[in-house]
Length: 154
Image 1 (cartoon, rainbow, N blue to C red):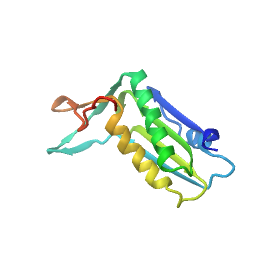
Image 2: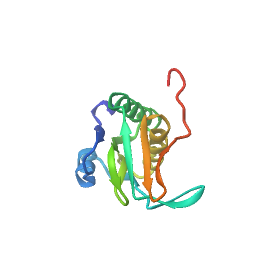
Image 3: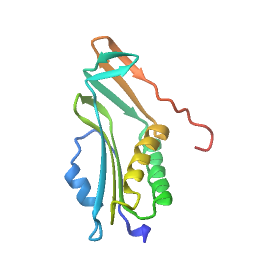
Image 4: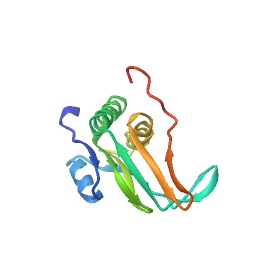
């Protein structure tokens, strides 16, 4: 049955349409949807609080999309009751308040692991998907380094 569930992996420099994305992941049996959306912050507390004008995201598309598909497969293995899975990552210049990433999971019921699956999706995306982020603000430009460094086979 999981083979017939919808999956959407998108790396885009365009705006996001959450209504369309939800419609694409909804089946006649869907009764729950969890949508996590990361948003560009105007103030960041990494060390001392500082202002951000905008972020610039870059990605190596073939590898990023492959790793995003891996995250979706891991979600399906851990939460077989999850129906639709959408993983979207924006690239390019994104202003404060702009959505940067979306993890959307649907299921028949809210108690089917759909919350946990969406949380796992964003955590795992930040962990293994090769996307680079530059903060631009009054203090200049800074590449923000993640905590994860891939090991062979990951």
